[in-house]
Length: 147
Image (cartoon, rainbow, N blue to C red; front, side):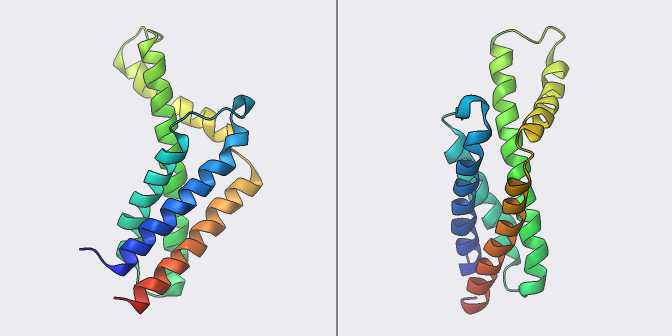
C-alpha cells in the first residue's frame, strides 16, 4: 500500500544511494567505476527505502535510528553483492571457473570481501551510518505528518 512514508523513504534513500555511489568512485582502481554503478546503487536505495524504511515510518524517531542503521547497512551489502555478482559474471564469461558453478558462487563472496576491504574507509562507513539515520528521520517526519 503506497503511503507518504514509503514514497518519501524511496525517494530519500534513492538520493542517498546516488550520493554514496558518487563517494565510492575514487575507491575503485584508477577511479574507474563501472558504468552501472550509480543507477544500480540508487535503485537499491529506492527499494530499501520503500521496503524497509518506508514500511516502518510513523513509529517514532527513536526506532527510526535502528531502521536507518539497518537501511544503511542493507544498501552497502546489496551494492557490494551487485558489484561482486557482476564481476563473477564477467569472470564466468571469460571461462575462469574450471570447477563448475559452486566455484563461481563462492567467488561472489570472495569478491565481496575484496571490494569490502577496498571500500573500508572510516569516513565512508560513518557516512553510511549517519546518513542512514538522517534519511530515516526525514522519512519518519513525512510518515508522521502524512499518514
